[in-house]
Length: 169
Image (cartoon, rainbow, N blue to C red):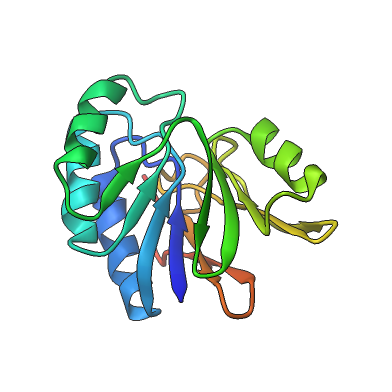
């Protein structure tokens, strides 16, 4: 299975739409969002764009109405909003999800996860920490000028980082 992984939207739904389109073209059938939609309206758009594909999400430090986001996820047939740090198993992989690098580093060092995924820094990273994949897909906001996401292949256990082909104003 290919899982589209992205983070740090910060209300830039104009970047979300082409990212979702590209992830679908790359064969993603599941999505993971690592925090900072910022508003419930952006989270609603995220749920709409993932359609009926599974979505696992965690809140970030700039998600200001997490309770409303929880209600939205609960009313969706395919979306789940987890606590700020979650360990989930998908397609034979144990995944650590968090917006914050501290949780990802802790899980990677502990050996409890196959992949520790995080956002927050807006910097794309893919490295190994022992036997664990430690990765940040970057950002969809475009604050750093690089708009990107990751695609995790659960068969190969490799994440490929991708850029969108336009500059964020």
